[in-house]
Structures are given as C-alpha cells and as structure tokens.
Length: 469
Image: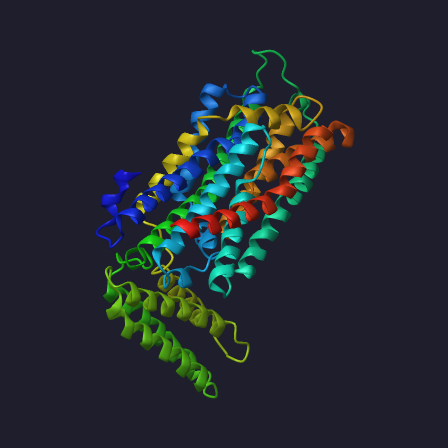
C-alpha cells in the first residue's frame, strides 16, 4: 500500500500519521480481500454443487465479474456508506480523530468476518461494516458530542438489510413453486451424483448465467462499500485534496450554477407570490460561487466550507422541488434535478485508481479461501443435495435483489439474500423438514449477533485508538 502514497500528493501529515495512513489503506484493501472470499463464495456455491462448473473455472470466473461489477457499478452505495459517519465534523477536527475512527471500523469488520469465515458460517459483511460504522460513530459522539451517527441513513440501510433476505426467501419459494407446478421440466429437479453427472447444456447455461449475474451485482454493491471506506480514509487524512473533486474545473461548476439560476428564473415567472423561496435559493447559489475561490488542494478550511455549501445547496434544491406550494412544470423539474445531480458530483466522487484498487482486491480475494462458505451453502442449508432448479432459483432472486438495491444506492447482504433464497427453494421442494435446523440456527445466530458485536467491538477499538493515536 505504500506504493499508493505518491498518488496522494504532498501533505502535512507527520511521520506517525503517515504510517497510520498507510496502515488504514492496507486495512481497507484487506477488508475487501476478505470480503471477496467470504461473500463471493455464495455466488459460486450453486454452480459448483450442481456440477455446472468446476471450482478451478468457477472461482476465477466469479472473481473477474466481481472486478467488473465494482469497476462499472457507480458510487451510489459508496456514498451511502460515507453518509453514515459525521464527515463534515471530522474535517474540522485533528487528523488523528479520523484515523481512530477509520481503524476501528476496519479492524472490527475484518476480525468478525475472519472469525465467521473460519467457522464456515455465512455472515453478512454488510451487517458487519454497518455495525462497525455505528459503533465508531457512537464513540465519536461520546468524545465530541453531536450526532456521530446519521440515524436516518442507518435506519434506511438497516431496513434494506433486514427486508432483503425475507424478500429473497419469499421470491425463491414462489419461483420454485412455479417451476415445479407450471414448467414441470423434470431435468431441472435432478440432483447430480458423481463427478461426471453434469447438467444438460441449457440448464448449465442458465446456472452459469445466474452465477455471473450474482458475481457482477455482488461487485457492484459490496465492492462499492470498499470504495466508500477508501474515500473515508482519504477524506479523513487529506480533506483538502479529497473532500471535493478538484478535477472538475471551476468554470464548469460556475456553468452548472448559472444554468440552475436560469431554470429558477423560468420557474419564478409561474410563481410570483413565492419570491422569498427563490431569493433564498439564489443567495445559496451565489454563496457557492463566492466560495469557489477558496476551493484549494492545500486549503483545508476553505475546501471544508466550500464542501458544506455545495452539500447545503443540494439539500435546498431537493426541498425546493418538494415544495407543494410551488408550480413547477415537468421540464423545469427535470432540469433542476439534472443540475442538482451535476453539482453533487463535486463532493460525491471516487478517483478511478481507488475503484481499480478495490476491484482488484475483491477479485483476487474471491479466488482464495472460498471453500468453507461454499460447503455450508451447497451442503448444509438443506437436508438434500442442491438440485439444478434450487441453484438457479436462488441465484436469479439474489441477482435481481442485489441489482435493484445497487440502483437505489442501498447496501444489501449477498450472503443473506442467497442463503435465504436457497432456504426458500428447499422449503418449496420439501417443506420445513427439508431444512437443516442446525445450520439455519448458526446462520440465524450470526445474523442476530453481527450488529451488536461489531458495534461493541468498533466502539471499544475507537476508544482504545483514541488514547494512543
């Protein structure tokens, strides 16, 4: 990770903080590497246990599509992760505070992920990460007051993490019932036996396709969490350089703001009685223009103020569009939404090299340590070996759920969605008696314990690091 430091430019970090900075970068890559073999095993379990692909082919194939998923998946989920912590407050405090928070989050996540992987328990890296962020945020509040956790965002993410496995279970069960009672294609329900008992070509193509989709969407969702963590580190240690995107020219930002003012003038004509709202929004736009001169890679305070104003402007435009007292035609509404999304890119971004590093870490991690989780998914959730229909059903549901969540910018657990999908397909095949109670108990226990354990572990680590960094 020390090789990345030259990319970060000049900084005023002391030698001690520079070492901690390098450790944090190494830790986030390690987290994503562990995430690769911990979570991606879910994607390959079905193709391996239905004999659609041999492990030697399935693992690198899945790793490649995870890489592409991160690389092309955007940054909506990554920005959602950043919004869980008090970024703006962190930028005003000594760098050591941010270092303590970042290290606590990363180490708590890695410790719990490695522990559950060693025991072969499919556990959610997403749950672990969210819990660790909340725990460190609580520690931040303990020392510095205010709101260390964005509880609204935490509630939104928590709801998606809770509902997604329930949706996976229900949809997989319905799809399996459909295949059994409507399609009735007997070859789909064959349980492979022996090394050479491979599925027919069409079924094999379906299984490989679903594995590919789960791998891709896992990268586009889970991989973005690593991007978010990487950006958290960069902003915490080098806020002047990474709190805003300095690659966007100032004249382009001015052009976006001018276009926004132009649209507002059009809307103002249709709302002559609401001049106060327009004056307020215009004053915010002018303030952003004024503070644009303070946006500087070496001016922490100026860049911080500029970021705050851009963030505030985005919130104000959203509130303006939601004002029911205003008459805003569809064309103007679309134009304002477009300009708001453009100005948001100034503070919500990730350099391409960050995305490449995380993509490579997740892809390489996929190829190592996969077997423990694959055995649990393929053999131990149900009391019978996985058949073709169960494998395809669970992965179709998982790919769809993860893909939709990525578009919405919500992190979900690949582990919970896929394992609940397999459980649903098993119930549809043979009722509750077809489930392995012992395995489900272990998975359920890990699901219940992950949040409180990761919260407590991260909180304790933050308090410990806060004393020594």
